Image (cartoon, rainbow, N blue to C red):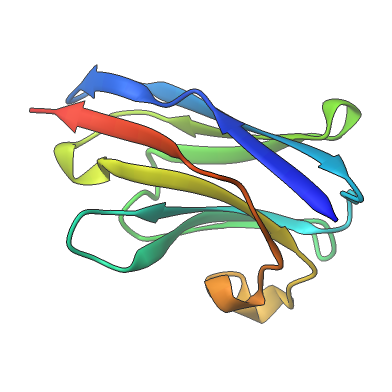
Length: 125
């Protein structure tokens, strides 16, 4: 089993920044793909960003490209989502996910085996 614990959510104003962290423990492996998804009011849970081990790389949803950055700290088994220039439409519950996911399927939540409990991000206008 892999345990994922998110932190760093909160209430901010439009244009502000937030840094989300996801601490992995248990049978977490550096080769697993790590990703962030979010549940936005009125919508299904959607892909935000992913970071892959092999092949190495990142992928972002078009809505966050240029504003969000996903990174990993292998020494501390932590995934970070740096969110800049936040907008009210970024409001939602952000979930960390992990799994052995084919590179071409990083956007699809069904392929992730492990999930955190989520952290709330609220951006006021």
